[in-house]
Image 1 (cartoon, helix red, strand yellow):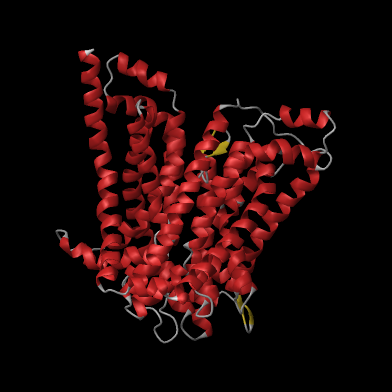
Image 2 (cartoon, rainbow, N blue to C red):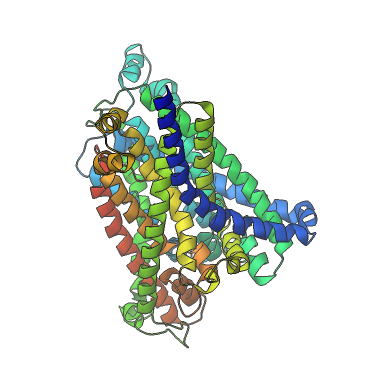
Length: 544
């Protein structure tokens, strides 16, 4: 008993030390800046006035309504694609699995300009469609992950008893998929409600959400109390979405454990061809803005031309940029590398801690794990502007004054990547057979050696996929970067936003050419991620 208690105490100490880095990182580089900004808003005495202002709730209603519309479209479009990925065996389905993920990791400025090429005047409808375009992959990959594990015999039994295909789906399959659909919908709503670049490009000054209004009040009006009030409203909505997502994710994991995996992919039969066709149609629609952007990048008033690509070697019309387009691209590559390395260290350690807490008996450990899991997702739902401005008013208190450090932008980008790394690595770590780890421990291996010999080989593909995925997301991050990057060190998405805001046809062509380059890099990276990051035939990418 004394030996067992000693091992438990040692394990608890080691777990606390492991948790120190991810928890400390979140505390210093997320909680502290956000609390500082909100605190300044309260100290200004205007939060109550801003909360009582009808304009605040009009913005909140518009944000919720557009996010709900985008979520609904993403769910309706994602379910046929999920069926295609989970149940259909046809040539080209593997390519569908890769291509459907491309929109999710495209930089927001790329998507904004792609939809602007289709709808030059912008408006609410393209704004809603653009946010849905981003998130079809979340629904498709999350729902297909559960759908591929469902035993098809229950639906077949319903059909044998006389139920139509639609009734069998509605009464048997859909209730089983409900946890995955709810989990995906909660995450999609979270992403849509905090969308920044797309709203800025397509909505302009006519259509503002909480996110863009926080930016306006912080940067242009210096209205910290109003920005703080809007941040609090946004934060409350985020917590609600995260709570729904966590509950649905737990139900989904329980559902998967109750069913053994069956090889259910086959050629469609009867009415299933209509569903499969709908999945292919959704994919074709997802590719339409991408093709439009590529065409726009080589289209000029005088015909087809690569002038925009050649002009990236310069600074644009009337010195629109302080650096060349290629220099901005190199800055993006370096910044994304730093952000990915940082996010991988923090995210992997956080995943290890979450798995250990889940395997530790007792309600306290489980509660701590669930709380930490939700906390790790919070950076996705808090305004990037709030975090960025918080950096500027707090980080001077740290040694070295990070406000002037080249690490400032990577730190902000890492906050966005860490939740995605955790969502990709955590399910794979949880799937490692605990008996293998126990056997290694019994033979005298310490925790570090168990991780090196057991966990690392089994999770290597997932780690590579997470690193690649995080790198692509960092490469296109725009929200926090647009606020923190200096004019002489812009990333490529910030340079694109600068070019598109300046007059001149050449600036416009340069912006579209830069977006096309970002998109091509994204497509190649996603293809590699999906190939090397797949586990048992299903990639962990998009398993939220």
